[in-house]
Length: 89
Image (cartoon, rainbow, N blue to C red; front, side, top):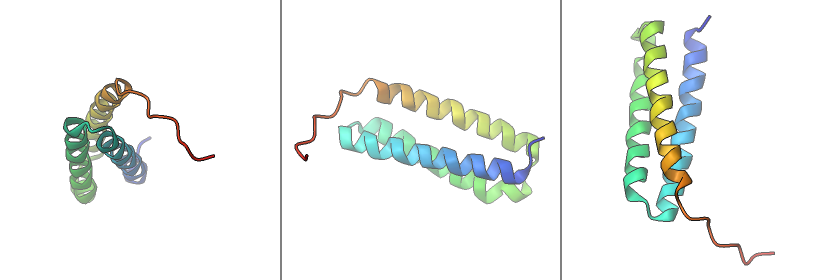
């Protein structure tokens, strides 16, 4: 059974993933993916704000949509070139 606390935790994990994707996109110069990740973070923030007044079914549907969106962004990130090796030893 999914409850509000589980959904809140999952949303926060998805937001962290979107944040990491945004940072990596910025480091690679992929501004389009960075912007999409920032939009995803904003959508997650909205969902977190509305969680108390949203039905569990609606929240699960939104969370599934956000997961799909993040999977698409992660696929874009997979096409980035590997970072150069670090000179630090």
